[in-house]
Length: 111
Length: 109
Image (cartoon, rainbow over all chains, first blue to last red):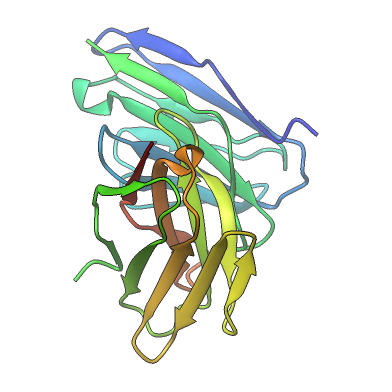
């Protein structure tokens, strides 16, 4: 099992550009999550999904979009990147609302 | 009041010491509890779940006090490799986990 994989590992964007962060899990988990973690801060939930076709907003959804067309994939879309979106992005998955397993993260810089 | 609160530390302890962290949560309906460990610039990893009766895994012991709404993590015989940030995590029952901001532990030789 690869667990949760994320691509890319690093990315630098210019202000106003768009990109998609990819997340895939092979554990057949129904729940998936996107978090951001700013330096020295805790994790903040951006969006989550409880199954294919079902997504919902977390604490900080503005400036992001998600989709969940399959159980395995949960991409996060950034439209019109802003410096405030410079952060480390973690994807996670879980079976129901039990312990979550995290991907290695994507380090994004917007300049 | 934050949903999950932790002392950010850092806790500086020598090798071999015993150290304990507490974490308080505000929602009395919270259903499950976890401790995660996060190394610098890495993803959080599950350390242990916290059960009502308390549980132990080697040098690590977790306790839950529902009446006072806190959970604790005790680390005995600290190792250099225990240096990390420890995240308290609570399932509030709304289909998502709430993460504390973490307690930083530094174990020195």
